[in-house]
Image 1 (spheres, one colour):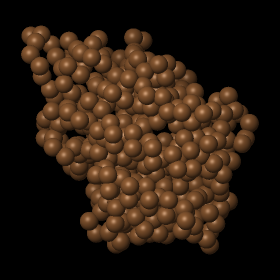
Image 2 (tube, helix red, strand yellow; image 1 turned 90 degrees about the vertical axis):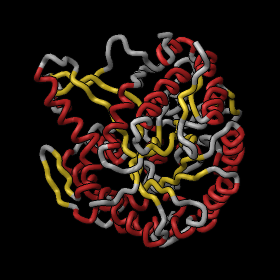
Image 3 (tube, rainbow, N blue to C red; image 1 turned 45 degrees about the horizontal axis):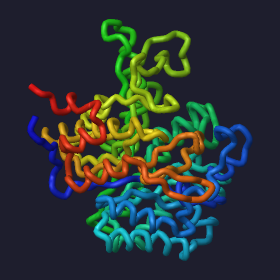
Length: 443
């Protein structure tokens, strides 16, 4: 067949995403450092340790790798515990490091997208009850003001809170994240305070920087009934979808938090997003099960024939990306794909996973949906929370002993996409020939 290309709009943001605790190294003053020190919390007892040594300065060489391979944007996060190590003390030297990062990106024609809260909390905040405490939204807003005032000359894209749904569920329902609780009432309290924290942060950002664009990055988990013909599979799927995917963003639109078991009015949250941040990784089937009362009688699992990542953590189901884009589009705001990627140390699944998911993005753009950018998770292998170093999401591999970066083939694949601003038939033929006929059928 003739050469063809799925072209993306001019000015589309192509980047990668990272998070402070996962790449900086030697973060010792937050809840995750404490969590890692407790036996049984992290797979194989692993610790973030030096991570990718960004706090030691290696962020610059990684940024250079991103720039030199065609990326025009980067998403990273600020570590609250570095900026405000104690309740009454600010660390301007730490803030200046982040300023240097933003300045470097800006001067090298790379758009910075800065996340203000990515799972970690200062220990002093945790001692006060963390996000269970009704005073925390105001404390968060105070921290946001300090950061935005310092970085506003170089940044106008902000994510206030990364994946509040995952932060709540993993910390207060499943207990895999700190504080490791299984308390639904407490989870609702945290949800309300996070929403209020976002709303307060949104207001502060626009006071400091009127032209800012502010959003929340939501982990959208595509959910479909396991059996389309069995009516009982649909109710638990819809309930899980409402709780996990929709409740928080609906509240940021309407000011009303609607959960199946609780309704809370938060009027100050209404209309507090300028864009939707979409994190998408995979899809689950949901099957009615009386045994799974903790999951509201809906057992989740991957299809039997799923194209799985090495540890079975992610199923390659590009149709779920379409679901996520459709969900985001419903809010009638611009959309930024703030995370998408797959753990794959062998780098055999990543090329087809990335290309197939980006093809769904291209389809959505051709419906005139306002999708402004794509941030691949991740630039370099990093510490994957409770899964430690057992999963490798980076375009670049990392030897944690030597800090050597290992260039995977996917670096070249993504570079081609970024520089061509599209998915070409030649590129697919080279990096993922097994899906060529699917994307470029002969007829």
